[in-house]
Length: 346
Ligand SMILES: [Zn+2]
Ligand SMILES: [Zn+2]
Image (cartoon, rainbow, N blue to C red):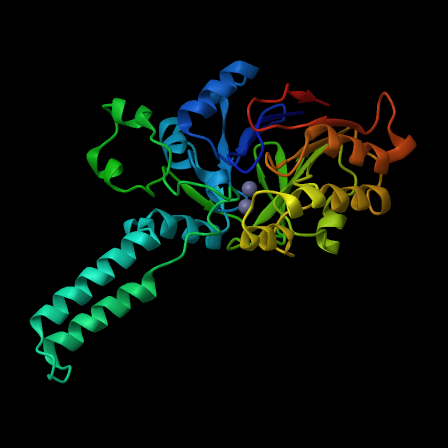
């Protein structure tokens, strides 16, 4: 069984999991072009992918999803809530920025003032117009938590690959949320794709229905788990991560660096919250006290580029693992944002 991390971090996440007969991509958080480029770099054939699985709808996990799934014509597995949230995210009204909305609101107000004499009591057309503005305000959906990147552009990457493909019907191009096939799974309920058994588990994070996954290859019984984007380690996650051979685990930030770092206060609060991200120390605490010590590899991922240093994350984890770290067990690897990690074969 093989795990290949193509990218990990708040600007894009994607990992290939391959058993003998089945290959899936977990998350598609880079542009389709970049995902294909990185797969070529590590020797993963995209044409052999059977499905894409999505952990949650944040942009750093879905940026290239629609274009990649359409290009490869493979099904996408979501929870129903995550799929709905993703579709909502792609609808045009939610792409309006607050500044743009405020502009529009002000100009409507100005236009209204100009039309209506000072002494008039609101009524008729004016009331309707006010109602329209309020309705717009009500549907305005702040986009602050749509990504784990604190400075995202909230624009999907320009994926020109699809426009070049004359086989893509105009109708499909017009619907940004069109997918060749959608399959739903439920957190806590096991399902399988080919010879891969998949157990999705709920993680505490500020998305609609976020999940981590444990994959088991039915051929040889090897198990690999992914758990990033979680504010803390609840009992269900600790239980899910028992008996795994490869564990991709979040080690997002160094607490001191986050506190002194460049993020605005509100973003710091979000990262630190119970639905934010695991600090190096929180990850180390899990590794020292709850982790069963049975993995060949522990891959630290979703490292913050502003509030962490890879070597700091590694040292903190290695210290927690202690003398359980041997030539054959508990080797610590770092999954980074800028380049894929060499495939891990177990
Ligand atoms: Zn993320
Ligand atoms: Zn997230």
